[in-house]
Each structure stands twice: as structure tokens, then as C-alpha cells.
Image 1 (cartoon, rainbow, N blue to C red):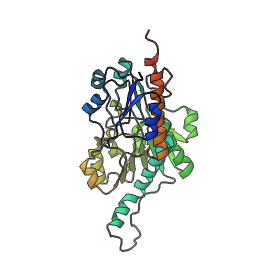
Image 2 (cartoon, rainbow, N blue to C red):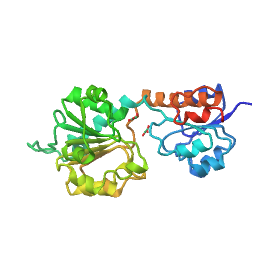
Image 3 (cartoon, rainbow, N blue to C red):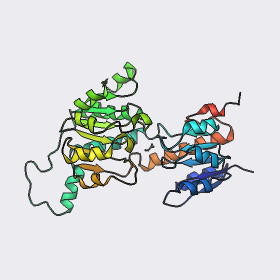
Image 4 (tube, rainbow, N blue to C red):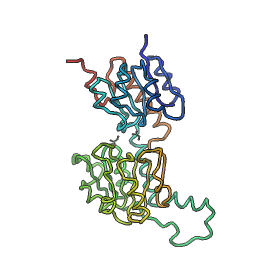
Amino acid sequence: TRPRVLVARRLFPEITERLSAHFEVDAYAGVAPLSPSELVARLQGCAGVLVTGTERIDAALLEACPALRAVCSMAVGYNNIDVAACTARRVLVSNAPGVLTETTADFGFALMMATARRISESEHWLRAGQWKQWSYDLFAGSDVHGATLGILGMGRIGQAIARRGALGFGMSVAYHNRSRLPPADEAAVSARYVDLPELLRIADHLVIVVPYTPQTHHLIGAAELALMKPTATLTNIARGGVVDDRALAEALKLRRIAAAGLDVFEGEPQVHPDLLTVPNVVLTPHIASASLPTRRAMAELAATNLVAALTGAQPPTALNPEVLAPAA
Ligand code: GLV
Ligand code: GLV
């Protein structure tokens, strides 16, 4: 009999169809995500699961789902998956790097520009019927072109944002990353490496693209925000927990920095109530990779990994390919 797999979120019907050529597919069609206990219940007897960045796959779930052999995510960030616990149980894990890089960089740049130029704030004001006359400082923001772009996290997406800033907008690009890029890669995106305090001090526009790990939890808090220019903007398209949202709301309220653009939040879909009351923040619901072609490519890549993992082929973007090696 064919292996059973769960598609844990409502997805393109073509994905289910494609998986059905290989597997017995249970495609969850609900809009609200499965609760942890519902997920465990649906996974009984499943050899594989296609997840997104929101399903929590931890040791307790693996314990409760002994048939599981592959967890394939359509997200690039995998902080929702305990990869070490999966490896210990020889469960293959894959994510979806590469296919969303340019789309996510487009959005990061758009959010940074909307933040610098106060696009959301001015639209709310216009819709509220407050536009009676023009004035010289009406929603005057800061320039993006020619400014210093600070990038925190120089993976694929960080480099794609750097390229946009340097080549398209004549920005001076500085970055900080856990490890420095090889000189040729730095040159390719015209970026110079600085330490984190220096990055915070010099950036006119800071864009955060680091993965969320114990090391990056609250990497940006009150002390870090205090180093930034009062005219600076902060854009977060990484994960909410990287920024201390309470401290950020406070800094925005007191104008310690000019504005922020946030696509991700600590404890999303809950948003810190203080962020909802400050005007100088652009808020979007975790949509940086959300172009239709890219969401399709992400789902396709997850499906490709799932088919490979359960049919004895090499999944293209496995995070722990060693689990597929024959046991020593
Ligand atoms: C989205 O946040 C992703 O990690 O793909
Ligand atoms: C994601 O693809 C990253 O490395 O930034």
C-alpha cells in the first residue's frame, strides 16, 4: 500500500494532485491552522507531512507520531521545526531556500521604502478625510536613494536586498552577519562588513533578515535601538522574536527612531498592542514571500522534497540529508 502523507495547510490543489500520484494524501482544507493535538491526530499513520512555517514539529510530536519519516516545509525559515530531534529519530527535514529569495527581497525593499516615505501613515490619513491642503512638510520622510542601507543577516535574501540598494538606488551598503562573506561576494553586492553596534550607528535604513535562533532572540532590544539614529528606519522581514516588539513600540512612540516596517511579529498572528497604536509603523501580515508564482514554487519544492524523501531519492533541499544514509 502507498505511504500516507498529510498536507497540513490549505494549499494549491495541484500540489495535492501531484502528491496523489505517489501517496495516499490527506489534504487539510481548513483555513485555521490545525492545533498541535489536531496535528498529532491527523498525522497518525503518516510517513510524511508538508508543512509551512507555522506548524510546530518538536520532540513531543515526533514521539506521538512514530510512523513519520519526512517533514517538508515550504518556508525557508525553520525555527518551527526541531531539526536535531528529527535527526535523532531519522526523520528527514527540508525547507525551501532559493525559490523565494528575489520575491522576499522585493518585499523587504518595498516595506523599507513605504516606511521611509510614510506611505501607510499618509494613506490612513487621506482615507480618514483629513486632506484639506498641501503643506511643505506634509508626511515628509527620509530619502532611500543615496542613503546608508544596513543589512542584518547576509544570506541569500540579504544579498538580494543589498544588490537592489547598491545597483538600483545608489545606496552605501553595510552589513553584519554571523560570518563574513568571501571578498568576491561582498564585492558582487557592494557591501562592507561591520560589527553590529557599528551597523546600528551608521544605518539610515536597517533591514533585518537573520534566521530566528536562540542566538538571535531579541537581538534588537532597547539597548540596540538606542544606538540607532533618530532619523533611522528599521524593517523586519525575518522573524518576530529577533526584535523585542515592546522595546520597538516604545522607541517608535518616543521617536528614538523615525519609523519601522514589520512583516513579522513575536507571537503572530497576535501583534503587540503598543505597535497598533503608534502611527510611525507599517504593519503587514507575514507576506514577504507572497507572490502567487513564488508561493507556488515554494509549495512545489516542498512536494519535490517529500516525494524524494519517501521514494528513496535525494531531496534537493534537505536540512539533515545524513538521515537518509544507510545506518552504520
Ligand atoms: C517565511 O517566513 C519563510 O520562512 O519562508
Ligand atoms: C534565505 O534564503 C536566506 O539565506 O536569507
